[in-house]
Length: 212
Image (tube, rainbow, N blue to C red):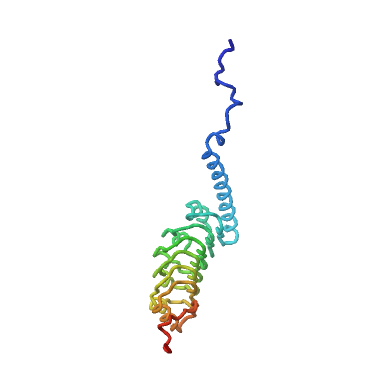
């Protein structure tokens, strides 16, 4: 009789774990994708250390990784591009860590709010929050002292505080196209003359036609 092997049957006959459990195969694929995403983020952080421009667009991010703040701790960033991800929120510490940025692109994400600390970005001149899920414009935006250009198009904004827009200290242009603004809000914003406001032309209702 053949003595029993310490490994039991021939280990070469054992099925591949990924074949035995389909979930294992999916996990292996996810791990490889995650690994590539990490490499991409680190590579772009290294580039930002040279040119002071952090481009993390299209990196499949759900949030800004803590490692990014660590890698950028000795770099005075001038711009940050987080567009084309699936980010749902920006933490308050973002404004503290990247306090010197003048341009911030948050477009094409899944954000519906911003932290109040966004007002502390004292050098911010251009902000893009288009193609997100905002239903209102965060008040903190209009407190940023040097903000000149704000793109909030393609959101779900129905109402805007017109006085906040008028009182923004440095705002020059505001893009609100492709938002479901109420009739009252649309008409009020259209009357603003202090800054350039881009609006999608409103379709008038039948009852508004004075000829009827």
